[in-house]
Image 1: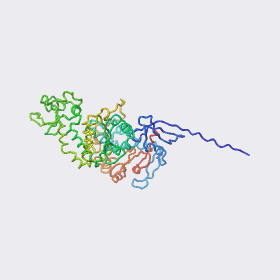
Image 2 (image 1 turned 90 degrees about the horizontal axis):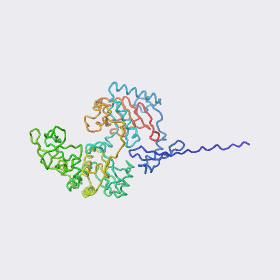
Image 3 (image 1 turned 60 degrees about the horizontal axis):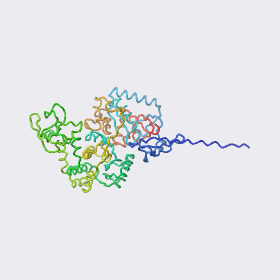
Length: 525
Protein backbone atom coordinates (compact mmCIF):
# COMPACT_ATOMS: atom_id res chain seq x y z
CA UNK A 1 0.00 0.00 0.00
CA UNK A 2 1.34 3.39 -0.98
CA UNK A 3 0.78 6.22 1.47
CA UNK A 4 1.20 9.76 0.19
CA UNK A 5 1.73 12.68 2.53
CA UNK A 6 -0.56 15.72 2.11
CA UNK A 7 1.10 18.57 0.18
CA UNK A 8 2.55 21.22 2.46
CA UNK A 9 0.41 24.31 3.00
CA UNK A 10 2.15 27.44 1.71
CA UNK A 11 3.01 29.91 4.43
CA UNK A 12 1.13 33.19 4.31
CA UNK A 13 3.35 36.22 3.90
CA UNK A 14 1.75 39.29 5.42
CA UNK A 15 3.32 42.77 5.37
CA UNK A 16 1.97 46.01 6.80
CA UNK A 17 3.48 49.03 5.07
CA UNK A 18 2.87 52.61 6.24
CA UNK A 19 2.03 55.22 3.62
CA UNK A 20 -0.70 57.68 2.74
CA UNK A 21 -3.76 57.77 0.53
CA UNK A 22 -3.59 60.13 -2.46
CA UNK A 23 -7.22 59.92 -3.57
CA UNK A 24 -7.86 63.52 -2.48
CA UNK A 25 -5.97 66.49 -1.06
CA UNK A 26 -6.37 65.21 2.52
CA UNK A 27 -3.42 62.80 2.14
CA UNK A 28 -4.59 60.64 5.05
CA UNK A 29 -1.92 58.44 6.61
CA UNK A 30 -2.58 54.77 5.97
CA UNK A 31 -1.40 51.30 6.92
CA UNK A 32 -1.40 49.10 3.82
CA UNK A 33 -1.85 45.38 4.41
CA UNK A 34 -0.25 43.13 1.78
CA UNK A 35 -0.81 39.38 1.88
CA UNK A 36 1.14 37.13 -0.48
CA UNK A 37 1.90 40.13 -2.68
CA UNK A 38 -1.73 41.25 -2.85
CA UNK A 39 -3.16 44.40 -1.23
CA UNK A 40 -6.01 43.20 0.97
CA UNK A 41 -6.73 46.18 3.24
CA UNK A 42 -5.94 49.82 3.84
CA UNK A 43 -6.40 51.03 7.41
CA UNK A 44 -5.91 54.31 9.29
CA UNK A 45 -2.45 55.04 10.65
CA UNK A 46 -3.01 57.02 13.87
CA UNK A 47 0.71 57.78 14.30
CA UNK A 48 0.63 59.77 11.04
CA UNK A 49 -0.35 63.47 11.35
CA UNK A 50 -3.38 62.90 9.08
CA UNK A 51 -3.95 59.22 9.82
CA UNK A 52 -6.68 59.26 12.44
CA UNK A 53 -9.31 57.99 9.98
CA UNK A 54 -9.85 56.91 6.38
CA UNK A 55 -12.90 57.57 4.24
CA UNK A 56 -14.70 54.75 2.33
CA UNK A 57 -12.84 55.66 -0.86
CA UNK A 58 -9.45 55.16 0.79
CA UNK A 59 -10.55 51.92 2.45
CA UNK A 60 -11.70 50.64 -0.95
CA UNK A 61 -8.15 50.73 -2.33
CA UNK A 62 -7.94 46.92 -2.78
CA UNK A 63 -11.03 47.06 -4.99
CA UNK A 64 -9.33 49.71 -7.14
CA UNK A 65 -5.97 47.93 -7.35
CA UNK A 66 -7.44 44.51 -8.15
CA UNK A 67 -10.43 45.61 -10.23
CA UNK A 68 -11.10 42.97 -12.88
CA UNK A 69 -11.78 45.72 -15.46
CA UNK A 70 -8.35 47.32 -15.09
CA UNK A 71 -6.67 48.24 -18.36
CA UNK A 72 -3.62 46.01 -18.71
CA UNK A 73 -1.93 46.99 -21.97
CA UNK A 74 -1.86 49.89 -24.46
CA UNK A 75 -4.72 49.72 -26.97
CA UNK A 76 -5.12 51.18 -30.45
CA UNK A 77 -8.36 51.94 -32.27
CA UNK A 78 -9.05 50.05 -35.53
CA UNK A 79 -12.60 51.31 -36.29
CA UNK A 80 -13.89 54.86 -37.00
CA UNK A 81 -14.80 57.00 -33.98
CA UNK A 82 -18.45 56.95 -35.00
CA UNK A 83 -18.54 53.15 -34.74
CA UNK A 84 -20.21 51.55 -31.72
CA UNK A 85 -17.19 49.24 -31.34
CA UNK A 86 -13.77 50.98 -31.37
CA UNK A 87 -12.16 47.70 -32.38
CA UNK A 88 -9.44 47.90 -29.75
CA UNK A 89 -6.27 45.98 -30.49
CA UNK A 90 -3.40 45.59 -28.00
CA UNK A 91 -0.03 47.09 -28.96
CA UNK A 92 3.29 47.26 -27.18
CA UNK A 93 4.34 50.18 -25.01
CA UNK A 94 7.18 50.94 -27.41
CA UNK A 95 4.87 51.17 -30.40
CA UNK A 96 2.31 53.24 -28.52
CA UNK A 97 4.84 55.77 -27.20
CA UNK A 98 6.58 56.05 -30.58
CA UNK A 99 3.28 56.75 -32.36
CA UNK A 100 2.35 59.40 -29.76
CA UNK A 101 5.77 61.08 -29.90
CA UNK A 102 5.75 61.19 -33.71
CA UNK A 103 2.27 62.76 -33.77
CA UNK A 104 3.13 65.34 -31.09
CA UNK A 105 6.26 66.31 -32.99
CA UNK A 106 4.40 66.58 -36.31
CA UNK A 107 1.58 68.76 -34.93
CA UNK A 108 4.03 71.08 -33.16
CA UNK A 109 6.03 71.52 -36.37
CA UNK A 110 2.99 72.07 -38.59
CA UNK A 111 0.69 74.16 -36.36
CA UNK A 112 2.61 74.92 -33.17
CA UNK A 113 2.42 73.09 -29.84
CA UNK A 114 -0.71 75.04 -28.90
CA UNK A 115 -2.60 72.82 -31.39
CA UNK A 116 -2.28 70.03 -28.80
CA UNK A 117 -4.35 70.38 -25.63
CA UNK A 118 -3.97 68.32 -22.48
CA UNK A 119 -6.50 67.10 -19.94
CA UNK A 120 -6.04 66.30 -16.25
CA UNK A 121 -8.47 64.72 -13.85
CA UNK A 122 -9.11 66.52 -10.56
CA UNK A 123 -6.25 66.43 -8.01
CA UNK A 124 -8.87 66.89 -5.30
CA UNK A 125 -10.58 63.62 -6.15
CA UNK A 126 -8.00 61.33 -7.74
CA UNK A 127 -4.51 60.01 -7.22
CA UNK A 128 -3.11 62.26 -9.94
CA UNK A 129 -2.08 64.70 -7.19
CA UNK A 130 1.47 63.44 -6.73
CA UNK A 131 2.03 63.27 -10.51
CA UNK A 132 0.52 66.65 -11.33
CA UNK A 133 3.67 68.82 -11.16
CA UNK A 134 5.48 66.42 -13.49
CA UNK A 135 2.57 66.43 -15.95
CA UNK A 136 2.48 70.23 -15.91
CA UNK A 137 6.23 70.30 -16.48
CA UNK A 138 5.73 68.07 -19.54
CA UNK A 139 3.01 70.36 -20.93
CA UNK A 140 4.89 73.63 -20.35
CA UNK A 141 8.14 72.32 -21.81
CA UNK A 142 6.28 70.90 -24.82
CA UNK A 143 4.95 74.43 -25.30
CA UNK A 144 1.16 74.17 -25.02
CA UNK A 145 -0.81 76.77 -23.00
CA UNK A 146 -3.92 74.61 -22.97
CA UNK A 147 -4.73 72.30 -20.05
CA UNK A 148 -8.37 71.38 -19.48
CA UNK A 149 -9.24 70.02 -16.06
CA UNK A 150 -12.21 71.86 -14.52
CA UNK A 151 -10.58 74.33 -12.12
CA UNK A 152 -13.39 76.76 -12.97
CA UNK A 153 -15.89 74.19 -11.65
CA UNK A 154 -14.12 73.45 -8.39
CA UNK A 155 -11.38 75.58 -6.93
CA UNK A 156 -10.72 78.69 -9.01
CA UNK A 157 -12.56 80.98 -6.59
CA UNK A 158 -10.68 79.95 -3.45
CA UNK A 159 -7.23 79.18 -4.83
CA UNK A 160 -6.98 81.94 -7.45
CA UNK A 161 -10.04 84.21 -7.32
CA UNK A 162 -9.23 84.74 -3.65
CA UNK A 163 -5.90 86.09 -4.81
CA UNK A 164 -7.64 89.09 -6.41
CA UNK A 165 -8.52 90.30 -2.90
CA UNK A 166 -5.97 88.78 -0.52
CA UNK A 167 -2.98 88.57 -2.83
CA UNK A 168 -2.85 84.83 -2.13
CA UNK A 169 -5.13 81.84 -2.34
CA UNK A 170 -7.23 80.79 0.64
CA UNK A 171 -4.84 79.68 3.37
CA UNK A 172 -5.39 76.60 5.56
CA UNK A 173 -7.65 77.13 8.60
CA UNK A 174 -5.93 76.74 11.99
CA UNK A 175 -8.88 74.82 13.43
CA UNK A 176 -6.97 73.42 16.40
CA UNK A 177 -6.09 76.84 17.83
CA UNK A 178 -9.06 79.04 17.04
CA UNK A 179 -12.05 80.46 18.89
CA UNK A 180 -14.43 80.40 15.94
CA UNK A 181 -14.64 78.19 12.83
CA UNK A 182 -16.77 79.07 9.82
CA UNK A 183 -17.58 76.42 7.20
CA UNK A 184 -18.94 78.28 4.18
CA UNK A 185 -20.25 75.92 1.52
CA UNK A 186 -17.76 73.32 2.67
CA UNK A 187 -18.13 69.96 4.39
CA UNK A 188 -14.67 68.61 5.38
CA UNK A 189 -16.21 65.32 6.52
CA UNK A 190 -16.67 64.42 2.85
CA UNK A 191 -14.04 66.60 1.16
CA UNK A 192 -11.02 66.83 3.49
CA UNK A 193 -11.03 64.23 6.24
CA UNK A 194 -7.81 65.39 7.93
CA UNK A 195 -9.32 68.85 8.32
CA UNK A 196 -12.50 67.36 9.73
CA UNK A 197 -10.39 65.72 12.44
CA UNK A 198 -8.61 69.03 13.15
CA UNK A 199 -11.95 70.80 13.34
CA UNK A 200 -13.26 68.23 15.81
CA UNK A 201 -10.18 68.76 17.98
CA UNK A 202 -10.82 72.50 17.92
CA UNK A 203 -14.38 71.86 19.03
CA UNK A 204 -13.14 69.73 21.91
CA UNK A 205 -10.99 72.67 22.98
CA UNK A 206 -14.05 74.91 23.09
CA UNK A 207 -14.12 76.59 19.66
CA UNK A 208 -17.52 77.60 18.36
CA UNK A 209 -18.73 76.48 14.93
CA UNK A 210 -20.76 78.34 12.31
CA UNK A 211 -21.97 76.51 9.20
CA UNK A 212 -23.33 78.35 6.16
CA UNK A 213 -24.90 75.75 3.89
CA UNK A 214 -28.31 75.03 2.32
CA UNK A 215 -27.86 71.40 3.38
CA UNK A 216 -28.18 70.05 6.87
CA UNK A 217 -24.81 68.33 7.02
CA UNK A 218 -23.58 66.61 10.17
CA UNK A 219 -21.54 69.71 11.00
CA UNK A 220 -24.59 71.92 10.39
CA UNK A 221 -26.64 69.77 12.74
CA UNK A 222 -24.09 70.14 15.54
CA UNK A 223 -23.10 73.77 14.86
CA UNK A 224 -23.58 76.63 17.31
CA UNK A 225 -25.08 78.57 14.42
CA UNK A 226 -26.39 77.23 11.12
CA UNK A 227 -27.38 79.65 8.38
CA UNK A 228 -29.44 77.88 5.74
CA UNK A 229 -29.18 80.27 2.81
CA UNK A 230 -30.47 80.06 -0.74
CA UNK A 231 -27.85 78.63 -3.14
CA UNK A 232 -25.89 81.46 -4.74
CA UNK A 233 -26.87 84.09 -2.14
CA UNK A 234 -23.52 83.83 -0.32
CA UNK A 235 -22.25 87.20 -1.54
CA UNK A 236 -25.30 89.01 -0.21
CA UNK A 237 -24.83 87.41 3.19
CA UNK A 238 -21.13 88.31 3.32
CA UNK A 239 -21.79 91.95 2.47
CA UNK A 240 -24.63 92.22 5.00
CA UNK A 241 -22.45 90.91 7.81
CA UNK A 242 -19.61 93.22 6.75
CA UNK A 243 -22.02 96.16 6.94
CA UNK A 244 -22.89 95.28 10.54
CA UNK A 245 -19.22 94.95 11.54
CA UNK A 246 -18.38 98.34 10.02
CA UNK A 247 -21.40 100.08 11.56
CA UNK A 248 -20.59 98.70 15.00
CA UNK A 249 -16.86 99.42 14.66
CA UNK A 250 -16.40 95.69 15.36
CA UNK A 251 -13.62 95.22 12.83
CA UNK A 252 -9.85 95.33 13.26
CA UNK A 253 -9.31 98.93 12.22
CA UNK A 254 -5.56 98.85 12.85
CA UNK A 255 -5.19 95.88 10.47
CA UNK A 256 -7.38 97.52 7.85
CA UNK A 257 -5.31 100.71 8.01
CA UNK A 258 -1.88 99.05 8.01
CA UNK A 259 -2.27 95.98 5.82
CA UNK A 260 -5.02 96.65 3.24
CA UNK A 261 -5.72 99.05 0.38
CA UNK A 262 -8.53 100.67 2.37
CA UNK A 263 -6.72 104.06 2.74
CA UNK A 264 -5.72 104.30 -0.93
CA UNK A 265 -7.35 107.19 -2.78
CA UNK A 266 -9.53 106.41 -5.79
CA UNK A 267 -10.05 109.03 -8.49
CA UNK A 268 -13.70 109.95 -9.02
CA UNK A 269 -13.11 110.80 -12.70
CA UNK A 270 -11.57 107.45 -13.73
CA UNK A 271 -12.36 105.04 -10.89
CA UNK A 272 -8.65 104.13 -10.75
CA UNK A 273 -6.31 104.28 -7.78
CA UNK A 274 -4.41 107.55 -7.67
CA UNK A 275 -0.66 107.21 -8.28
CA UNK A 276 2.05 109.28 -6.62
CA UNK A 277 3.43 110.38 -10.00
CA UNK A 278 0.03 111.83 -10.93
CA UNK A 279 -0.14 113.89 -7.74
CA UNK A 280 3.41 115.30 -8.03
CA UNK A 281 4.55 113.17 -5.08
CA UNK A 282 7.60 111.88 -6.92
CA UNK A 283 8.05 109.87 -10.07
CA UNK A 284 7.21 106.56 -8.40
CA UNK A 285 4.29 104.28 -9.16
CA UNK A 286 3.28 104.20 -5.47
CA UNK A 287 -0.32 104.66 -4.41
CA UNK A 288 -1.64 107.64 -2.44
CA UNK A 289 -3.47 108.10 0.87
CA UNK A 290 -4.79 111.25 2.57
CA UNK A 291 -2.92 112.28 5.71
CA UNK A 292 -5.42 113.94 8.06
CA UNK A 293 -2.65 115.43 10.23
CA UNK A 294 -1.02 117.39 7.41
CA UNK A 295 -4.16 117.80 5.33
CA UNK A 296 -2.27 116.56 2.28
CA UNK A 297 -1.96 113.56 0.02
CA UNK A 298 0.95 111.24 0.85
CA UNK A 299 2.59 108.38 -1.00
CA UNK A 300 1.51 104.92 0.18
CA UNK A 301 3.72 101.87 -0.40
CA UNK A 302 1.60 98.71 0.03
CA UNK A 303 4.58 96.36 -0.23
CA UNK A 304 5.01 96.72 3.53
CA UNK A 305 2.79 97.56 6.48
CA UNK A 306 2.23 101.20 7.30
CA UNK A 307 4.04 102.53 10.34
CA UNK A 308 1.49 102.51 13.23
CA UNK A 309 1.78 106.29 13.71
CA UNK A 310 1.22 106.94 10.01
CA UNK A 311 -1.63 104.44 9.92
CA UNK A 312 -3.53 106.38 12.59
CA UNK A 313 -3.57 109.52 10.45
CA UNK A 314 -4.63 108.11 7.06
CA UNK A 315 -8.26 108.76 6.15
CA UNK A 316 -10.72 105.93 5.67
CA UNK A 317 -13.69 108.14 4.76
CA UNK A 318 -14.45 111.55 3.28
CA UNK A 319 -13.68 113.18 -0.05
CA UNK A 320 -10.48 115.07 -0.86
CA UNK A 321 -9.34 117.30 -3.72
CA UNK A 322 -5.98 116.46 -5.22
CA UNK A 323 -4.28 118.50 -7.93
CA UNK A 324 -3.65 116.29 -10.97
CA UNK A 325 -2.14 117.96 -14.01
CA UNK A 326 -3.23 121.37 -12.77
CA UNK A 327 -6.83 120.22 -12.18
CA UNK A 328 -8.41 119.60 -8.79
CA UNK A 329 -9.85 116.07 -8.85
CA UNK A 330 -12.11 114.61 -6.17
CA UNK A 331 -10.74 111.40 -4.60
CA UNK A 332 -12.07 109.07 -1.93
CA UNK A 333 -10.44 106.29 0.11
CA UNK A 334 -11.21 102.78 -1.13
CA UNK A 335 -12.74 101.96 2.25
CA UNK A 336 -15.29 104.78 1.85
CA UNK A 337 -16.36 103.33 -1.50
CA UNK A 338 -16.60 99.86 0.05
CA UNK A 339 -18.81 101.14 2.88
CA UNK A 340 -20.99 102.98 0.38
CA UNK A 341 -21.59 99.75 -1.50
CA UNK A 342 -22.73 98.09 1.73
CA UNK A 343 -25.30 100.79 2.39
CA UNK A 344 -28.48 99.06 1.21
CA UNK A 345 -27.71 95.59 2.58
CA UNK A 346 -29.47 95.82 5.90
CA UNK A 347 -30.17 92.53 7.70
CA UNK A 348 -33.83 92.73 6.68
CA UNK A 349 -33.02 93.33 3.01
CA UNK A 350 -30.37 90.60 3.02
CA UNK A 351 -32.85 88.23 4.65
CA UNK A 352 -35.24 88.70 1.72
CA UNK A 353 -32.48 88.01 -0.80
CA UNK A 354 -30.70 85.16 0.99
CA UNK A 355 -33.46 83.36 2.84
CA UNK A 356 -31.51 83.65 6.11
CA UNK A 357 -33.56 85.28 8.91
CA UNK A 358 -32.32 88.74 9.87
CA UNK A 359 -31.70 87.66 13.45
CA UNK A 360 -29.33 84.95 12.25
CA UNK A 361 -27.44 87.45 10.09
CA UNK A 362 -27.00 89.60 13.20
CA UNK A 363 -25.99 86.52 15.18
CA UNK A 364 -23.22 85.75 12.67
CA UNK A 365 -21.92 89.30 12.99
CA UNK A 366 -21.99 88.88 16.78
CA UNK A 367 -20.00 85.63 16.58
CA UNK A 368 -17.33 87.24 14.41
CA UNK A 369 -17.16 90.37 16.58
CA UNK A 370 -16.74 88.35 19.80
CA UNK A 371 -14.12 85.92 18.53
CA UNK A 372 -10.52 86.64 19.49
CA UNK A 373 -9.44 84.41 16.62
CA UNK A 374 -11.37 82.87 13.75
CA UNK A 375 -10.78 80.87 10.59
CA UNK A 376 -12.94 79.88 7.65
CA UNK A 377 -13.04 77.76 4.53
CA UNK A 378 -15.32 77.72 1.50
CA UNK A 379 -15.21 75.26 -1.38
CA UNK A 380 -17.64 73.81 -3.90
CA UNK A 381 -20.73 75.28 -2.27
CA UNK A 382 -19.37 78.64 -3.39
CA UNK A 383 -17.41 77.51 -6.42
CA UNK A 384 -20.26 75.98 -8.44
CA UNK A 385 -22.02 79.26 -9.21
CA UNK A 386 -21.57 81.48 -12.24
CA UNK A 387 -20.46 84.39 -10.06
CA UNK A 388 -18.25 82.35 -7.72
CA UNK A 389 -15.25 84.67 -7.99
CA UNK A 390 -17.30 87.71 -6.98
CA UNK A 391 -18.88 85.75 -4.11
CA UNK A 392 -15.41 84.77 -2.94
CA UNK A 393 -14.21 88.37 -3.10
CA UNK A 394 -17.13 89.44 -0.90
CA UNK A 395 -16.30 86.71 1.62
CA UNK A 396 -12.57 87.47 1.49
CA UNK A 397 -13.22 91.16 2.15
CA UNK A 398 -15.49 90.29 5.09
CA UNK A 399 -12.78 88.21 6.73
CA UNK A 400 -10.11 90.78 5.91
CA UNK A 401 -12.02 93.06 8.29
CA UNK A 402 -11.18 90.65 11.13
CA UNK A 403 -7.39 90.97 10.76
CA UNK A 404 -6.95 87.20 11.07
CA UNK A 405 -4.90 86.66 7.93
CA UNK A 406 -1.91 84.40 8.70
CA UNK A 407 -2.48 84.81 12.45
CA UNK A 408 -2.60 82.00 15.05
CA UNK A 409 -6.11 80.58 15.00
CA UNK A 410 -6.80 82.24 11.64
CA UNK A 411 -6.06 81.10 8.09
CA UNK A 412 -2.36 80.32 8.15
CA UNK A 413 0.38 79.89 5.57
CA UNK A 414 2.49 77.11 7.08
CA UNK A 415 6.23 77.04 6.48
CA UNK A 416 7.36 74.85 3.59
CA UNK A 417 10.65 73.39 2.50
CA UNK A 418 12.72 75.82 0.38
CA UNK A 419 12.90 73.62 -2.70
CA UNK A 420 12.79 74.56 -6.36
CA UNK A 421 9.34 73.89 -7.87
CA UNK A 422 9.00 70.99 -10.27
CA UNK A 423 6.75 73.01 -12.54
CA UNK A 424 5.94 76.68 -12.95
CA UNK A 425 3.86 78.44 -15.56
CA UNK A 426 6.92 80.63 -16.08
CA UNK A 427 8.44 77.65 -17.93
CA UNK A 428 6.13 78.46 -20.82
CA UNK A 429 7.36 81.13 -23.25
CA UNK A 430 5.44 84.45 -22.96
CA UNK A 431 4.42 84.25 -26.64
CA UNK A 432 2.81 80.85 -26.01
CA UNK A 433 0.94 82.07 -22.92
CA UNK A 434 -0.88 84.60 -25.09
CA UNK A 435 -2.28 81.73 -27.18
CA UNK A 436 -4.26 80.13 -24.32
CA UNK A 437 -7.77 79.37 -25.58
CA UNK A 438 -10.32 81.72 -23.98
CA UNK A 439 -7.75 84.25 -22.74
CA UNK A 440 -9.39 87.03 -24.76
CA UNK A 441 -12.67 86.74 -22.84
CA UNK A 442 -11.22 85.61 -19.48
CA UNK A 443 -7.98 87.63 -19.11
CA UNK A 444 -8.02 87.20 -15.31
CA UNK A 445 -9.53 83.72 -15.38
CA UNK A 446 -8.12 80.21 -15.72
CA UNK A 447 -6.62 80.80 -19.19
CA UNK A 448 -4.24 83.30 -17.58
CA UNK A 449 -2.63 80.24 -15.93
CA UNK A 450 -2.86 77.98 -18.99
CA UNK A 451 -6.11 76.27 -17.93
CA UNK A 452 -8.96 76.23 -20.42
CA UNK A 453 -12.62 75.27 -20.16
CA UNK A 454 -14.22 72.22 -21.77
CA UNK A 455 -16.64 74.19 -24.00
CA UNK A 456 -13.78 76.38 -25.27
CA UNK A 457 -11.76 73.25 -26.07
CA UNK A 458 -14.72 71.76 -27.96
CA UNK A 459 -15.12 74.93 -30.06
CA UNK A 460 -11.43 74.91 -30.91
CA UNK A 461 -11.71 71.30 -32.12
CA UNK A 462 -14.95 71.78 -34.10
CA UNK A 463 -14.82 75.39 -35.30
CA UNK A 464 -11.07 76.12 -35.16
CA UNK A 465 -11.70 79.12 -32.89
CA UNK A 466 -9.30 80.77 -32.15
CA UNK A 467 -7.38 78.02 -33.98
CA UNK A 468 -7.83 74.32 -34.53
CA UNK A 469 -6.83 71.89 -31.81
CA UNK A 470 -5.71 68.74 -33.61
CA UNK A 471 -4.63 66.59 -30.68
CA UNK A 472 -5.50 65.97 -27.03
CA UNK A 473 -3.40 64.03 -24.53
CA UNK A 474 -5.66 63.21 -21.62
CA UNK A 475 -4.69 62.00 -18.16
CA UNK A 476 -7.84 60.58 -16.63
CA UNK A 477 -10.20 63.48 -17.32
CA UNK A 478 -13.67 62.16 -18.18
CA UNK A 479 -14.91 65.13 -20.22
CA UNK A 480 -18.31 63.65 -20.98
CA UNK A 481 -19.10 63.41 -17.26
CA UNK A 482 -17.15 66.27 -15.69
CA UNK A 483 -17.61 69.05 -18.28
CA UNK A 484 -20.77 70.86 -19.46
CA UNK A 485 -22.61 69.95 -22.68
CA UNK A 486 -21.71 66.27 -23.20
CA UNK A 487 -23.44 66.28 -26.61
CA UNK A 488 -21.02 68.95 -27.82
CA UNK A 489 -18.20 67.01 -26.18
CA UNK A 490 -19.05 63.83 -28.09
CA UNK A 491 -19.16 65.78 -31.34
CA UNK A 492 -15.75 67.29 -30.63
CA UNK A 493 -14.14 63.97 -29.68
CA UNK A 494 -15.53 62.31 -32.82
CA UNK A 495 -13.92 65.03 -34.96
CA UNK A 496 -10.65 65.20 -33.05
CA UNK A 497 -7.73 64.13 -35.23
CA UNK A 498 -5.63 62.49 -32.52
CA UNK A 499 -6.71 61.57 -28.99
CA UNK A 500 -4.66 59.73 -26.36
CA UNK A 501 -6.39 58.71 -23.12
CA UNK A 502 -4.51 57.49 -20.01
CA UNK A 503 -6.58 55.81 -17.31
CA UNK A 504 -7.14 52.87 -14.97
CA UNK A 505 -10.41 51.80 -16.60
CA UNK A 506 -12.47 52.49 -19.69
CA UNK A 507 -14.81 55.49 -19.42
CA UNK A 508 -17.35 57.21 -21.70
CA UNK A 509 -14.52 59.53 -22.80
CA UNK A 510 -12.00 56.75 -23.55
CA UNK A 511 -14.49 55.40 -26.12
CA UNK A 512 -13.26 58.09 -28.52
CA UNK A 513 -9.50 57.66 -28.04
CA UNK A 514 -7.10 56.67 -30.79
CA UNK A 515 -4.64 55.22 -28.30
CA UNK A 516 -5.28 54.20 -24.68
CA UNK A 517 -2.47 53.89 -22.14
CA UNK A 518 -3.10 52.02 -18.86
CA UNK A 519 -1.89 53.74 -15.69
CA UNK A 520 -1.07 52.31 -12.29
CA UNK A 521 -2.64 53.20 -8.97
CA UNK A 522 -1.08 55.12 -6.12
CA UNK A 523 -0.48 51.85 -4.26
CA UNK A 524 1.58 50.46 -7.13
CA UNK A 525 3.88 53.46 -7.46
